[in-house]
Image 1 (cartoon, rainbow over the protein chains, first blue to last red):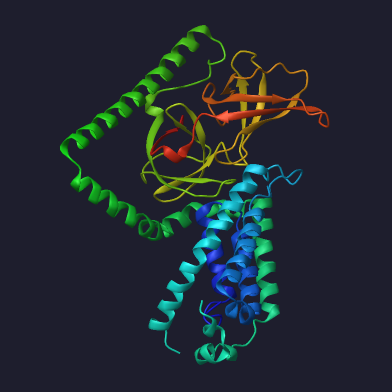
Image 2 (image 1 turned 90 degrees about the vertical axis):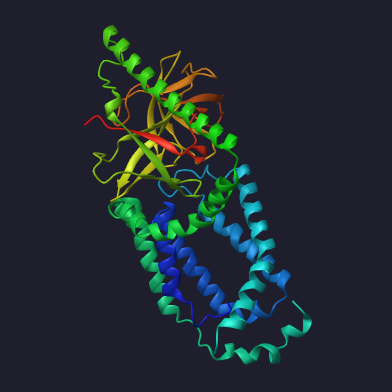
Length: 120
Length: 284
């Protein structure tokens, strides 16, 4: 979002595949999610970047919530999606909410680092 | 964020408006590539050939992640009193005794059953068939949790070898790298374990539903007489898991109107989250 010219599709693809290999998920699942998120961020970063921090956190909340739901689908047997139940929805909600709350801290730390260390 | 920071004049100094948009063609190409990876992995399990080796490559990363915990542990160890250390030694000794007891128990069970020439006649339990392996990492992925164990490079571990802990079955070896082995846990949504119930002696297949969640007995007819609280053991039917390893306990039995099968929920006895050592059974 802050440096869209520095981090792009290939980085998203690479880190996605690495995460798939290390966490045991279906190969390519993290990668496709990261590619989509990178594209969304790159496409809308003008709007996203200048919006207030609470709006950013709200958008991230929905993104993380959807992100978590994608991983609940049992891709090996598509007859049913029993993995998504109330307890998983609650876990996803807490995960998305905590991520949204942490975002301001992450945002200011990364911005501080970028302004001090990265020269244009 | 302060209101004044939203002004274009404050952010344009970072030259973000000169960045060209991402080419949609590249994005489509990347998504198609990912979909090919996903489909090939689901259909042909392509990743199983190199997934374990990737853990070897990612070892420095794991060590980096573990570093803060190791540092904090070292500091705690450094300042801990002699009494605490002796308590720790005692607990480790307890754990060792437990492991010995389990091995002894399995040996006794094996010999008894050989004499009876019953269900256990083909089981070849011996402590020489077991290897102790330390936990390397456990991925936070709920539905396809991946447990990675440290193994010796000379060890004779093979794919599909069962992995056990103090009180039952943990999973089976899915892939082997140079210094590690990846385990598919019984809680994994891809895992199916043939089981037999303790009292009713009914057979079934137990499917995982994710870490920290109940498993489910599949395709149980409504006439089946499973009972709540019954313990489930491996039946050894698929010849992957040895007979008689404890797997879990039936928690609830529901009779849904819209299904021709019973809904049998099973609680797994083993959770790898709070265990550090595991036994790998190899009868080769």
